[in-house]
Length: 262
Image (tube, rainbow, N blue to C red):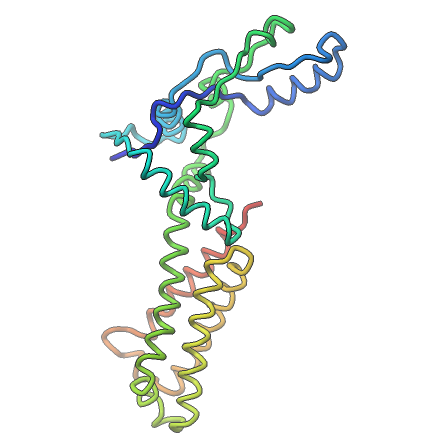
């Protein structure tokens, strides 16, 4: 419905990666090209807005009803958040460096290469026409937009769960102490709460993300097994505290698969 964009008027000349490869091979094989500099770009530039709309169309998405030009300051604020994510190991594409480059335009002069070789680089439309656009590309586009938000929310879920367990320690102990004794119940609640917080923090760090997902799955399975023996009546609770653990396991499995970059 709505396409937000920053630096909508930034001008860009694209180049297709196979054109670059062919140009490199030719430069290595043709002595007349030695000692020269060439910009490998398409002939005509596009605005960033046009590039975004063309890629949307290539993916098969409908044209947006409205295009909202966001303030540059908001874009750079979002980029700062992405920079912080980079400190945690995440390779976010929207970084301050990328926006600074875009703000100065991404342009080159295709004339010298054309004059030396008679060749030109494919236009963006020609490039997109050679690339497959399948359900896989559409799913990836949607998933990558949602992935950071889901990671943050999933991390908050575990951290807040652990904090609540520590805060309401006595109430949690009273819930299960009748089955396993107050002392053992206290240890279980304390250990589980601390483990929840550790999982939540681990989900924010790229290197420990998948391990934290697997740990979350193991902890959830442990909660289900323990709950089935200690408080089996919770399976019939109208709020479904045990039933709701099952989709948490599924989400952890999905996120662990999405986290693979290569």
